[in-house]
Image 1 (tube, rainbow, N blue to C red):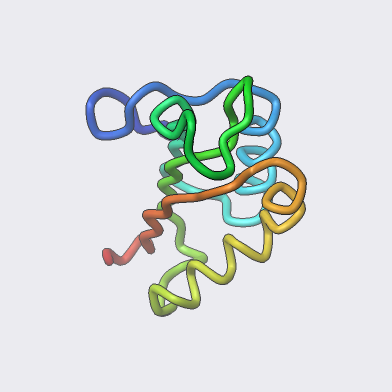
Image 2 (image 1 turned 90 degrees about the vertical axis):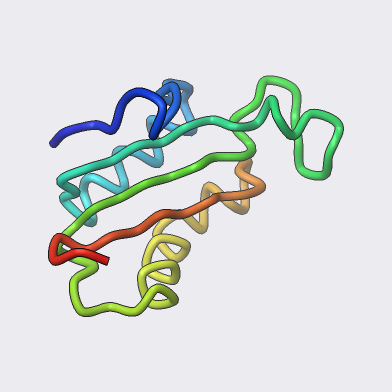
Length: 103
């Protein structure tokens, strides 16, 4: 599975919460593309920020599992899967979710 790299994705997050989310996303959606970028430092001093980061992420997933699903359905699928992480540590996810057939 190709990981997005470079300016489009930023630096791939490698912390324990990012790894946990990556494992779950791969197991559930078998993505052809996956990028998880920790944007927490940009939110220092704002609500939900915690020392050590891993509170604000940008996530891109391309998967056939999203084909035929609306944007809202795709978001619900991911948010349901990552609910435990949202309740425990993660404050915000910026999601880009694409099917294999395109948008």
